[in-house]
Image (tube, rainbow, N blue to C red; front, side):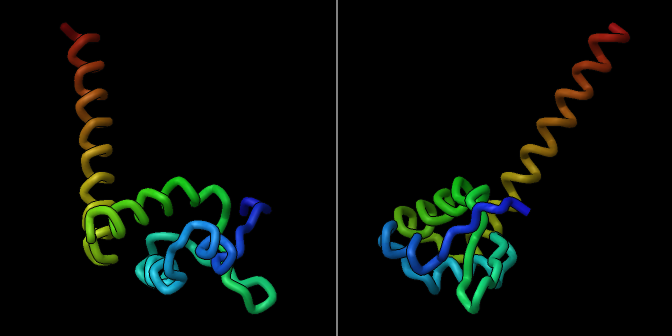
Length: 95
């Protein structure tokens, strides 16, 4: 585990984000929330992903369930791209 944890309440005050939104992301399994001294935290390594979810939610009005769907589709696209790259490499080797 990354030792750099960020207190969600402080992040939300700084970023003007509702803490409930981040907690909902945690409940949906989109980010991992850690409780330290009865205070919810996230790992600093999750910030890039969290900020992407925040943009989708606040700029595009995507709810948490929609964010989960988008993330799953993007993961599938990445997986398919890796498979295409692998198949191209095989074709290059045998062609």
